[in-house]
Image (cartoon, rainbow, N blue to C red; front, side):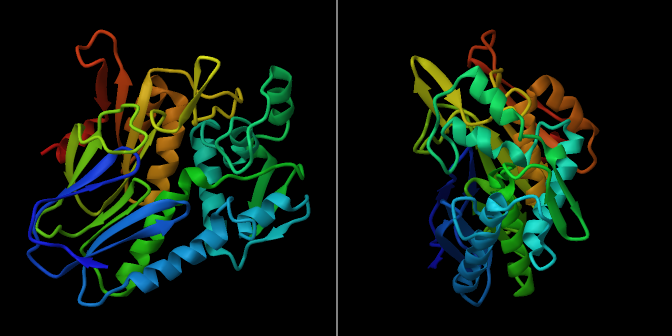
Length: 339
């Protein structure tokens, strides 16, 4: 835990955003650490140091939803057969699966937790990548599809024992929600929570203003050190998530493979959308929709985002006609935060 010092401070995030804050006016605390195989940064107004409690919450969260933790509840589900798996005493896991099924239906399967075998095959999951062939991808697609799982009265049922769930597309956003709930339980109302680039914002920053957020220009910046902000937003009492294909990728045989996998085709997506940022009332929703929009592409994602209540989105796309090589498209409500 650190006290924010009275100097200009820029906190870099791990995917595509930054929190732009300034000198300390009150007793804001700054904590940082690791959770869910990523880094977290917190700024919050409190007389009490809360990092031990925050770390405890995140450790429990990892034990519930990490597919990289072989002992987690999610890993147990992935090893289970077709017998019902009782989630009545696992509220975080039950909520993630319940909401994920809702997002799958909403996005026509663009968001799908059962994509895990494909993520592993392409080398972005918890197993080493396989030799890719159309026949191999087709074989995996036989047990990929959100329709292969059902949840009723706290009981999860897999139609095929090979179904494997991946919560990575919502875990960081939902972890922001969980930490926010903990801070609120301690009476904290002014905070910025950042976990792996996803954000939960409430109240005021150390300057007494709404939080200033920078969205990076998408570049091949694997170390997340770019300070070239494509967009800047000022907002509070919202959550924000960004999904992009410009940092998690690899090149094989001269071809670039990004980490966003289309559950319909089994292949990494190939389109002009470089990043999708979603602003919502909770981090789970923002994270899930940002992932879904990256799968869908901007032509389908923008009208869907515009139609959803309490949702705003910002898309950065490649554009050879623009001098910068990219363009920004947004839902109509974004302008309220472009200050």
